[in-house]
Length: 360
Image (cartoon, rainbow, N blue to C red):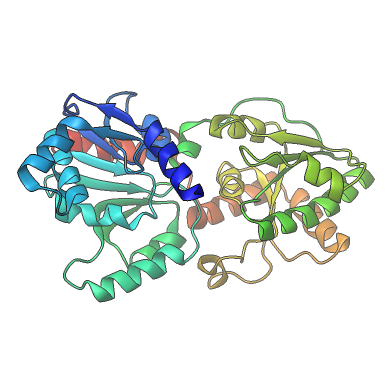
């Protein structure tokens, strides 16, 4: 019954279009890529191909059925859609969708660009390895893949046939560092809270932070993930807490919040590494969580380490606080190049996109 309700709910939400999709130099693959696309392309200067049934083009649907029938309908529908739009660039920021890396076989006339939007574990990489072994003549590929940093580039280079370019996170590059006065002796803890396991670790660290900030007179704030109301959970786990709980409204809001605090603490968070790329002082307790870190880094490092007691936390935090500005700048630049590069204004990506559109 629930499946039927969910299906009907999905059908009701679908938008139907009767006109042909407009021809465009840019075709954005997946509506969830639009946030990143808006940072790279002029708004409304692209056509979107919805892959999650957000919309259906009736014109293309009818023509597909009349000319191709219903056999392989979705494939033929997509093929006709691409042919009509006739893009120079097909772009996605959902970089871990294997389907995108099969599109070159469907419509060869475009340049395909994938843009990594977050820190990745090995799930997608393992899928690529299995697919390429099974389909030796149809391996996953695209023309250009923008990755966050050197580490992931070396991993992805083994499984995707593509020119890999280090470009950092598009949104982090797009929103500049604001010239605002930071709160003196302030800590922003960035929640990783995607799963129950991560949330448990967040709360463990938060207890240490609450104790530390009280004893050393730091102003503490806890930044939750968008849409995650964690106030009740925190009230249960950390009674009589004295810190601020902030729920980010969107990505731009997250970067604005970052600018107000002197030190960021996180267990595992793309936003945390974005803060590192911006040169903010960072303390990380889950740096070796994923194997693309663990096979490269020791258990302890210049801004990371395990935490088993309040003393562990205090020792690492004060070490980072006591770095000179020159020393921290050197550390943050070195590791952000490896993990998540910073390119204010997306200069690298814009140069490539402009060159492709001009056919140079």
